[in-house]
Length: 296
Image 1 (tube, rainbow, N blue to C red):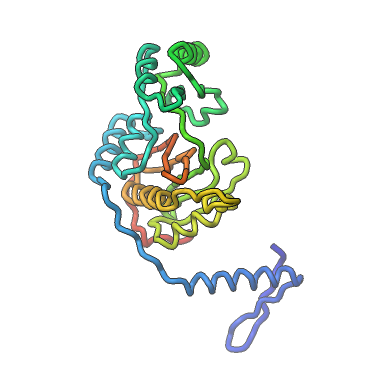
Image 2: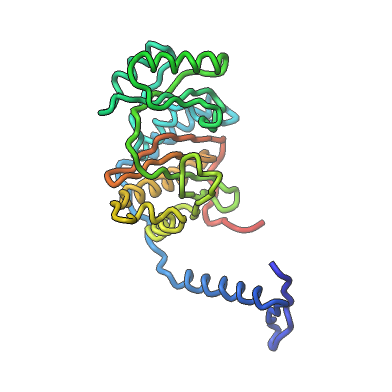
């Protein structure tokens, strides 16, 4: 960040002159990293199976037909869009009444018999901050009490609840994408859960992701040792993580209407990778030439 002066050189060139050695060392480090990056193989974009872009376009167009200004998808539409790309999601059910919530909980209870309930209304972003989540619900009485609590606190807002089985323990991650007007879709990955915005432990790469890009995304964040296995713990399902990022990249590339997508948390265990909560925002946009990535 220190000032640099360009001194004239032979044949019309210029040589940078730095006032401080620290600035010169920093510039040399940037140049070395760029040289190493340019020398890397370009990588390839892996082929994906069980993707349905035509159905995804239909989902997006149907939503925008009834929401001309765009907006965040409701849980059912969001799950349908993710299913078009084979993105793994924790089983869930939608309930609009107390009795429906009890029936859903009975069907979804896992081995420990506990479920999670999440309130939903249009525009809700941070459920934890709004105290719109009830965890560790066991038995019909607790499910009914949780639903009534939401009804009381979010009267006039809540349109329904999402009921899910209590997830297993694992590493909570974040995966997302945002559309840049100049550079196109940018895929982000890193530590998830409630610490996402506080620690900001994320890496980013432009879509479409290559096999090298996916490897960089997984290994770049500071939380990477948690995924690779430390102190005798088993590594997370790295192949599942790679597939998740590749499918998210494909979805962003196929759908110019996809303004942003947040998968948080994504639960990574040695056995599998699962999206526990997803938010997707669509806007009425048209596809742009991906080769017109340039500074204005």
